[in-house]
Length: 414
Image (cartoon, rainbow, N blue to C red; front, top):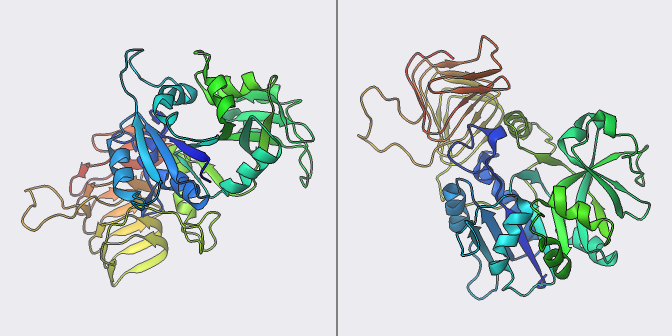
Protein backbone atom coordinates (compact mmCIF):
# COMPACT_ATOMS: atom_id res chain seq x y z
CA UNK A 1 0.00 0.00 0.00
CA UNK A 2 2.26 2.71 -1.30
CA UNK A 3 -0.22 5.53 -0.66
CA UNK A 4 -0.66 4.66 3.03
CA UNK A 5 1.72 5.23 5.94
CA UNK A 6 1.59 3.95 9.52
CA UNK A 7 2.25 5.80 12.76
CA UNK A 8 2.79 3.83 15.98
CA UNK A 9 2.36 5.88 19.16
CA UNK A 10 4.99 4.96 21.72
CA UNK A 11 2.87 5.57 24.79
CA UNK A 12 3.03 7.87 27.79
CA UNK A 13 4.40 7.32 31.28
CA UNK A 14 2.69 3.95 31.76
CA UNK A 15 2.15 4.49 35.48
CA UNK A 16 -0.25 1.55 35.77
CA UNK A 17 2.54 -0.78 34.59
CA UNK A 18 5.05 0.51 37.14
CA UNK A 19 7.67 -0.77 38.03
CA UNK A 20 7.99 -2.46 34.63
CA UNK A 21 8.03 1.08 33.20
CA UNK A 22 10.51 2.40 35.75
CA UNK A 23 13.33 2.31 33.19
CA UNK A 24 11.49 1.91 29.87
CA UNK A 25 8.38 2.97 27.98
CA UNK A 26 5.38 0.64 27.74
CA UNK A 27 6.04 -0.51 24.15
CA UNK A 28 9.55 -1.62 25.17
CA UNK A 29 8.25 -3.97 27.89
CA UNK A 30 9.10 -7.63 27.06
CA UNK A 31 6.27 -10.05 26.33
CA UNK A 32 5.94 -13.70 25.34
CA UNK A 33 9.52 -14.64 26.35
CA UNK A 34 11.17 -13.33 23.16
CA UNK A 35 9.33 -10.17 22.10
CA UNK A 36 8.57 -6.60 23.06
CA UNK A 37 5.12 -5.03 22.86
CA UNK A 38 6.16 -2.70 20.01
CA UNK A 39 6.79 -5.78 17.84
CA UNK A 40 3.05 -6.51 17.70
CA UNK A 41 2.04 -3.19 16.12
CA UNK A 42 4.98 -3.09 13.70
CA UNK A 43 4.39 -6.71 12.62
CA UNK A 44 0.71 -6.02 11.93
CA UNK A 45 1.82 -3.16 9.67
CA UNK A 46 4.37 -5.28 7.81
CA UNK A 47 1.82 -8.02 7.13
CA UNK A 48 -0.48 -5.38 5.61
CA UNK A 49 2.38 -4.29 3.34
CA UNK A 50 2.68 -1.01 5.22
CA UNK A 51 6.41 -0.45 4.87
CA UNK A 52 6.69 3.22 5.83
CA UNK A 53 6.27 3.25 9.58
CA UNK A 54 6.92 6.07 12.03
CA UNK A 55 7.30 5.25 15.73
CA UNK A 56 6.60 8.28 17.94
CA UNK A 57 8.37 8.19 21.31
CA UNK A 58 8.84 10.48 24.30
CA UNK A 59 8.96 8.87 27.75
CA UNK A 60 12.07 6.79 28.68
CA UNK A 61 12.56 6.07 25.00
CA UNK A 62 16.18 4.83 24.84
CA UNK A 63 15.35 1.13 25.24
CA UNK A 64 12.55 1.35 22.68
CA UNK A 65 14.66 3.35 20.25
CA UNK A 66 17.50 0.85 20.49
CA UNK A 67 15.21 -2.13 19.91
CA UNK A 68 13.54 -0.54 16.87
CA UNK A 69 16.89 0.48 15.37
CA UNK A 70 18.38 -3.00 15.88
CA UNK A 71 15.33 -4.91 14.63
CA UNK A 72 13.62 -3.28 11.66
CA UNK A 73 15.93 -2.85 8.69
CA UNK A 74 14.40 -3.07 5.22
CA UNK A 75 16.04 -3.78 1.89
CA UNK A 76 18.31 -0.94 0.75
CA UNK A 77 16.55 -0.95 -2.64
CA UNK A 78 13.04 -0.52 -1.22
CA UNK A 79 11.32 2.58 0.12
CA UNK A 80 10.47 0.88 3.40
CA UNK A 81 11.59 2.17 6.79
CA UNK A 82 10.76 2.24 10.47
CA UNK A 83 11.70 5.76 11.56
CA UNK A 84 11.81 7.08 15.11
CA UNK A 85 10.23 10.45 15.87
CA UNK A 86 10.94 11.88 19.31
CA UNK A 87 9.68 14.96 21.11
CA UNK A 88 11.90 17.89 20.16
CA UNK A 89 12.23 21.56 20.99
CA UNK A 90 11.35 24.01 18.24
CA UNK A 91 10.87 27.74 17.90
CA UNK A 92 7.15 27.17 18.45
CA UNK A 93 7.45 25.45 21.85
CA UNK A 94 9.15 22.95 24.14
CA UNK A 95 8.00 20.00 22.03
CA UNK A 96 6.67 17.75 24.81
CA UNK A 97 3.61 15.78 23.69
CA UNK A 98 0.44 16.49 25.67
CA UNK A 99 -1.66 13.72 24.11
CA UNK A 100 -1.99 11.41 21.13
CA UNK A 101 -3.27 14.05 18.70
CA UNK A 102 -0.81 16.64 19.97
CA UNK A 103 2.05 14.20 19.38
CA UNK A 104 1.02 13.69 15.78
CA UNK A 105 0.49 17.42 15.21
CA UNK A 106 4.04 18.13 16.35
CA UNK A 107 5.43 15.33 14.17
CA UNK A 108 3.64 16.45 11.00
CA UNK A 109 6.67 18.56 10.04
CA UNK A 110 8.39 15.21 9.36
CA UNK A 111 5.45 12.97 8.45
CA UNK A 112 4.07 15.55 6.03
CA UNK A 113 7.14 15.29 3.83
CA UNK A 114 6.13 11.79 2.77
CA UNK A 115 3.65 11.17 -0.05
CA UNK A 116 0.49 9.55 1.31
CA UNK A 117 -3.27 9.71 0.98
CA UNK A 118 -4.19 7.83 4.15
CA UNK A 119 -2.62 7.03 7.51
CA UNK A 120 -3.04 4.20 10.02
CA UNK A 121 -2.47 5.22 13.65
CA UNK A 122 -1.82 2.45 16.16
CA UNK A 123 -0.91 2.08 19.81
CA UNK A 124 2.43 0.46 20.58
CA UNK A 125 1.33 -1.37 23.73
CA UNK A 126 -1.46 -3.78 22.76
CA UNK A 127 -1.53 -7.52 22.04
CA UNK A 128 -3.53 -8.58 18.97
CA UNK A 129 -3.26 -9.75 15.36
CA UNK A 130 -5.34 -7.72 12.88
CA UNK A 131 -5.68 -7.64 9.10
CA UNK A 132 -5.19 -3.91 8.54
CA UNK A 133 -5.87 -4.33 4.82
CA UNK A 134 -9.45 -5.32 5.67
CA UNK A 135 -9.82 -2.23 7.85
CA UNK A 136 -8.49 -0.06 5.01
CA UNK A 137 -10.99 -1.69 2.64
CA UNK A 138 -13.86 -0.72 4.97
CA UNK A 139 -12.46 2.80 5.26
CA UNK A 140 -12.35 3.33 1.51
CA UNK A 141 -15.57 1.55 0.57
CA UNK A 142 -17.57 3.72 2.97
CA UNK A 143 -15.69 6.87 1.88
CA UNK A 144 -15.14 7.74 5.51
CA UNK A 145 -13.00 10.65 6.65
CA UNK A 146 -11.89 8.49 9.58
CA UNK A 147 -12.38 4.88 10.65
CA UNK A 148 -12.07 3.57 14.21
CA UNK A 149 -11.38 -0.06 15.11
CA UNK A 150 -13.88 -1.23 17.71
CA UNK A 151 -14.53 -4.30 19.79
CA UNK A 152 -17.57 -5.40 21.79
CA UNK A 153 -17.00 -5.36 25.56
CA UNK A 154 -19.23 -6.35 28.49
CA UNK A 155 -20.99 -3.63 30.47
CA UNK A 156 -18.68 -4.04 33.48
CA UNK A 157 -15.66 -3.05 31.36
CA UNK A 158 -17.09 0.04 29.66
CA UNK A 159 -15.71 2.46 32.26
CA UNK A 160 -12.21 1.71 31.00
CA UNK A 161 -12.84 2.56 27.32
CA UNK A 162 -14.26 5.12 24.97
CA UNK A 163 -17.68 3.73 24.03
CA UNK A 164 -19.13 4.51 20.61
CA UNK A 165 -22.65 4.04 19.30
CA UNK A 166 -23.15 3.21 15.60
CA UNK A 167 -26.14 3.29 13.25
CA UNK A 168 -27.27 0.44 10.99
CA UNK A 169 -24.67 1.41 8.35
CA UNK A 170 -21.75 1.29 10.78
CA UNK A 171 -21.38 5.06 11.04
CA UNK A 172 -20.41 6.33 14.48
CA UNK A 173 -23.12 8.66 15.78
CA UNK A 174 -22.17 9.12 19.44
CA UNK A 175 -19.08 8.86 21.64
CA UNK A 176 -18.76 8.69 25.42
CA UNK A 177 -15.35 8.59 27.12
CA UNK A 178 -15.17 5.92 29.87
CA UNK A 179 -18.85 6.08 30.85
CA UNK A 180 -19.89 4.90 34.34
CA UNK A 181 -22.88 2.58 34.72
CA UNK A 182 -25.40 5.41 35.00
CA UNK A 183 -24.47 6.71 31.52
CA UNK A 184 -24.73 3.35 29.74
CA UNK A 185 -28.45 3.45 28.79
CA UNK A 186 -28.70 4.47 25.15
CA UNK A 187 -25.06 3.65 24.31
CA UNK A 188 -25.85 0.16 23.03
CA UNK A 189 -25.32 -0.67 19.35
CA UNK A 190 -26.99 -3.32 17.22
CA UNK A 191 -24.44 -5.44 15.37
CA UNK A 192 -25.24 -8.14 12.81
CA UNK A 193 -24.73 -11.59 14.27
CA UNK A 194 -24.75 -10.46 17.90
CA UNK A 195 -27.26 -12.02 20.27
CA UNK A 196 -28.44 -8.58 21.33
CA UNK A 197 -27.31 -4.97 21.76
CA UNK A 198 -23.59 -4.59 22.54
CA UNK A 199 -21.24 -1.90 23.80
CA UNK A 200 -18.51 -1.04 21.31
CA UNK A 201 -15.17 0.12 22.69
CA UNK A 202 -12.54 2.02 20.74
CA UNK A 203 -9.32 0.02 20.37
CA UNK A 204 -7.22 3.15 19.82
CA UNK A 205 -6.56 2.17 16.18
CA UNK A 206 -7.53 4.78 13.59
CA UNK A 207 -7.43 5.44 9.85
CA UNK A 208 -7.65 8.96 8.42
CA UNK A 209 -7.64 10.46 4.97
CA UNK A 210 -4.86 13.01 4.77
CA UNK A 211 -7.06 16.07 4.33
CA UNK A 212 -9.36 14.99 7.15
CA UNK A 213 -6.43 14.43 9.52
CA UNK A 214 -4.77 17.74 8.74
CA UNK A 215 -8.05 19.58 9.33
CA UNK A 216 -8.71 17.66 12.55
CA UNK A 217 -5.28 18.55 13.95
CA UNK A 218 -5.58 22.25 13.11
CA UNK A 219 -7.38 23.35 16.33
CA UNK A 220 -4.68 23.56 19.04
CA UNK A 221 -7.18 22.39 21.64
CA UNK A 222 -7.43 18.98 19.99
CA UNK A 223 -4.96 17.17 22.25
CA UNK A 224 -6.23 13.59 22.17
CA UNK A 225 -7.84 11.49 19.42
CA UNK A 226 -10.36 9.83 21.69
CA UNK A 227 -11.33 12.84 23.77
CA UNK A 228 -11.21 15.62 21.18
CA UNK A 229 -10.58 14.71 17.53
CA UNK A 230 -13.09 11.90 16.98
CA UNK A 231 -15.99 13.53 18.93
CA UNK A 232 -15.49 16.80 17.03
CA UNK A 233 -15.66 15.01 13.67
CA UNK A 234 -18.90 13.09 14.30
CA UNK A 235 -21.32 15.87 13.42
CA UNK A 236 -19.38 17.12 10.39
CA UNK A 237 -17.89 14.11 8.60
CA UNK A 238 -18.41 10.39 8.24
CA UNK A 239 -16.57 8.47 10.93
CA UNK A 240 -16.90 4.74 10.31
CA UNK A 241 -16.64 1.80 12.70
CA UNK A 242 -14.50 -1.22 11.86
CA UNK A 243 -15.72 -4.12 13.97
CA UNK A 244 -13.04 -6.54 15.16
CA UNK A 245 -13.95 -9.81 16.86
CA UNK A 246 -10.52 -11.40 17.43
CA UNK A 247 -8.28 -11.45 20.48
CA UNK A 248 -7.21 -8.00 21.69
CA UNK A 249 -5.73 -7.06 25.03
CA UNK A 250 -4.64 -3.63 26.21
CA UNK A 251 -1.89 -4.74 28.61
CA UNK A 252 -1.88 -1.45 30.45
CA UNK A 253 -1.89 -2.76 34.04
CA UNK A 254 0.36 -5.16 35.92
CA UNK A 255 -2.52 -7.64 36.31
CA UNK A 256 -3.54 -7.59 32.62
CA UNK A 257 0.12 -7.88 31.56
CA UNK A 258 0.73 -10.81 33.91
CA UNK A 259 -2.41 -12.68 32.86
CA UNK A 260 -1.85 -12.10 29.13
CA UNK A 261 1.62 -13.62 29.42
CA UNK A 262 0.49 -16.63 31.44
CA UNK A 263 -2.32 -17.24 28.95
CA UNK A 264 0.36 -17.85 26.31
CA UNK A 265 1.37 -21.04 28.15
CA UNK A 266 -2.03 -22.69 27.70
CA UNK A 267 -2.27 -25.64 25.27
CA UNK A 268 -4.69 -23.58 23.16
CA UNK A 269 -4.00 -19.95 24.10
CA UNK A 270 -6.40 -17.15 23.07
CA UNK A 271 -3.44 -15.48 21.36
CA UNK A 272 -0.37 -17.23 20.00
CA UNK A 273 2.90 -15.91 18.66
CA UNK A 274 2.97 -19.04 16.50
CA UNK A 275 1.33 -18.38 13.13
CA UNK A 276 2.16 -19.99 9.75
CA UNK A 277 1.77 -16.81 7.68
CA UNK A 278 1.57 -13.88 10.11
CA UNK A 279 4.37 -14.23 12.65
CA UNK A 280 5.29 -11.49 15.09
CA UNK A 281 8.76 -10.21 14.21
CA UNK A 282 11.44 -9.23 16.70
CA UNK A 283 15.17 -8.74 17.01
CA UNK A 284 17.37 -11.50 15.56
CA UNK A 285 19.64 -12.23 18.53
CA UNK A 286 21.51 -15.26 17.12
CA UNK A 287 21.46 -17.02 20.47
CA UNK A 288 22.26 -20.68 20.97
CA UNK A 289 19.38 -23.05 21.82
CA UNK A 290 18.28 -23.25 25.44
CA UNK A 291 20.06 -25.96 27.44
CA UNK A 292 17.83 -27.93 29.84
CA UNK A 293 19.14 -30.61 32.22
CA UNK A 294 17.11 -32.89 34.51
CA UNK A 295 14.11 -30.56 34.76
CA UNK A 296 10.36 -30.92 35.07
CA UNK A 297 8.67 -28.32 32.91
CA UNK A 298 4.91 -28.10 32.42
CA UNK A 299 3.05 -25.48 30.36
CA UNK A 300 5.85 -22.99 29.79
CA UNK A 301 7.37 -20.72 27.17
CA UNK A 302 11.18 -20.77 27.17
CA UNK A 303 13.14 -18.36 24.99
CA UNK A 304 16.55 -18.93 23.38
CA UNK A 305 19.88 -18.83 25.16
CA UNK A 306 18.75 -20.09 28.59
CA UNK A 307 20.51 -22.46 31.01
CA UNK A 308 18.08 -24.43 33.18
CA UNK A 309 19.49 -27.09 35.50
CA UNK A 310 17.50 -29.51 37.67
CA UNK A 311 14.59 -27.11 38.16
CA UNK A 312 10.81 -27.36 38.34
CA UNK A 313 8.87 -24.92 36.16
CA UNK A 314 5.07 -24.79 36.01
CA UNK A 315 2.93 -22.41 33.92
CA UNK A 316 5.63 -19.79 33.50
CA UNK A 317 7.32 -17.67 30.85
CA UNK A 318 11.14 -17.66 30.68
CA UNK A 319 12.85 -14.84 28.78
CA UNK A 320 16.09 -14.82 26.80
CA UNK A 321 19.43 -15.68 28.48
CA UNK A 322 17.79 -16.74 31.75
CA UNK A 323 19.91 -18.84 34.10
CA UNK A 324 18.01 -21.07 36.55
CA UNK A 325 20.20 -22.91 39.07
CA UNK A 326 19.62 -26.43 40.50
CA UNK A 327 16.77 -26.85 42.94
CA UNK A 328 14.88 -23.74 41.83
CA UNK A 329 11.10 -23.91 41.58
CA UNK A 330 9.04 -21.53 39.47
CA UNK A 331 5.26 -21.45 39.29
CA UNK A 332 2.85 -19.03 37.58
CA UNK A 333 5.63 -16.49 37.10
CA UNK A 334 7.35 -14.40 34.44
CA UNK A 335 11.13 -14.18 34.20
CA UNK A 336 11.91 -11.52 31.60
CA UNK A 337 15.50 -12.64 31.01
CA UNK A 338 18.79 -10.76 30.67
CA UNK A 339 20.50 -8.46 28.20
CA UNK A 340 23.87 -10.21 28.59
CA UNK A 341 25.51 -13.16 30.30
CA UNK A 342 27.72 -12.94 33.36
CA UNK A 343 31.31 -13.11 32.14
CA UNK A 344 33.70 -15.57 33.83
CA UNK A 345 35.49 -13.95 36.77
CA UNK A 346 33.12 -10.97 36.87
CA UNK A 347 31.28 -12.09 40.01
CA UNK A 348 31.35 -9.63 42.91
CA UNK A 349 31.60 -10.80 46.54
CA UNK A 350 28.17 -11.17 48.10
CA UNK A 351 26.32 -10.48 44.84
CA UNK A 352 24.36 -13.37 43.29
CA UNK A 353 24.91 -14.16 39.60
CA UNK A 354 22.31 -13.16 37.01
CA UNK A 355 19.13 -15.22 37.10
CA UNK A 356 17.63 -17.50 39.73
CA UNK A 357 19.92 -18.98 42.39
CA UNK A 358 19.95 -22.49 43.85
CA UNK A 359 16.78 -23.59 45.66
CA UNK A 360 14.98 -20.32 44.90
CA UNK A 361 11.18 -20.54 45.05
CA UNK A 362 9.22 -18.09 42.88
CA UNK A 363 5.41 -18.05 42.73
CA UNK A 364 2.97 -15.55 41.21
CA UNK A 365 5.74 -13.08 40.48
CA UNK A 366 7.41 -11.06 37.73
CA UNK A 367 11.23 -11.02 37.68
CA UNK A 368 12.34 -8.19 35.42
CA UNK A 369 15.45 -8.18 33.22
CA UNK A 370 18.95 -8.51 34.65
CA UNK A 371 17.67 -9.28 38.15
CA UNK A 372 19.84 -11.35 40.48
CA UNK A 373 17.92 -13.74 42.75
CA UNK A 374 20.13 -15.26 45.45
CA UNK A 375 20.37 -18.79 46.80
CA UNK A 376 17.36 -19.97 48.82
CA UNK A 377 15.26 -16.87 48.09
CA UNK A 378 11.51 -17.34 48.54
CA UNK A 379 9.19 -14.96 46.64
CA UNK A 380 5.72 -16.30 47.46
CA UNK A 381 3.83 -13.38 49.08
CA UNK A 382 2.62 -15.53 51.97
CA UNK A 383 1.03 -12.46 53.63
CA UNK A 384 -1.13 -11.96 50.52
CA UNK A 385 -0.21 -8.28 50.38
CA UNK A 386 -1.91 -6.38 47.54
CA UNK A 387 0.10 -3.14 47.40
CA UNK A 388 3.54 -2.74 48.94
CA UNK A 389 6.98 -1.28 48.19
CA UNK A 390 10.11 -2.99 49.52
CA UNK A 391 13.87 -2.43 49.23
CA UNK A 392 14.18 -4.58 46.08
CA UNK A 393 10.61 -5.43 45.19
CA UNK A 394 7.15 -3.99 44.60
CA UNK A 395 3.76 -5.65 45.03
CA UNK A 396 0.97 -4.56 42.71
CA UNK A 397 -2.46 -6.21 42.70
CA UNK A 398 -1.01 -9.09 44.71
CA UNK A 399 1.79 -9.78 42.21
CA UNK A 400 5.38 -9.46 43.43
CA UNK A 401 7.61 -7.62 40.94
CA UNK A 402 11.39 -7.63 41.22
CA UNK A 403 12.46 -4.64 39.11
CA UNK A 404 15.11 -4.46 36.43
CA UNK A 405 18.71 -4.76 37.69
CA UNK A 406 17.55 -5.56 41.25
CA UNK A 407 19.62 -7.76 43.58
CA UNK A 408 17.79 -10.03 46.04
CA UNK A 409 20.28 -11.37 48.64
CA UNK A 410 20.60 -15.05 49.59
CA UNK A 411 17.87 -16.34 51.89
CA UNK A 412 15.50 -13.40 51.42
CA UNK A 413 11.78 -14.12 51.94
CA UNK A 414 9.16 -11.88 50.33
